[in-house]
Length: 115
Length: 112
Image (cartoon, each protein chain N blue to C red):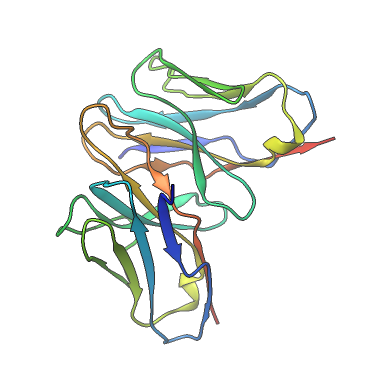
């Protein structure tokens, strides 16, 4: 049971560099999410996708873009990384419908440092 | 807007002590409530959940009761173990959106 897979697990970027964080789920879930985790602030929603082909901004979208490539994959892109984007990033997915578990399933995270 | 407030940590306990981590929420409608646990270096795992008032969620000796009258969902365990050391997040899923809202997390350290 792979669940939600994130790559890479660790990354160091220089200010101004770009990168894409990858996320894939194998649970046939409709909804996918990107969160960032910072000390003392819990998890904050960056972007989400309620279904294939749709994306919406969350609480802290500035500096990020997303792509819902297909039902399985939801990527997060930093076009020009800034030190304020140093964080741990989590991807999550959620099923829906009768009998579904309405909790989220999380990936193991990407620890990003921007220097 | 909807929000979740957890007690500040860190919480340090001796093994076999009783644990309570307070969580209160603000929400319209009838949200679902969750506790997630994050072990060092790992992602978040669902610990327990409750989807309506007076429901009790339980798992691995942990319990939490959905109290609508006090807007609370406190996490309890009768006897903690060193292996319970982790960060615990209370979360709310509003009834009208699919977006989970987290508290700030409470770090629990259990000493032998």
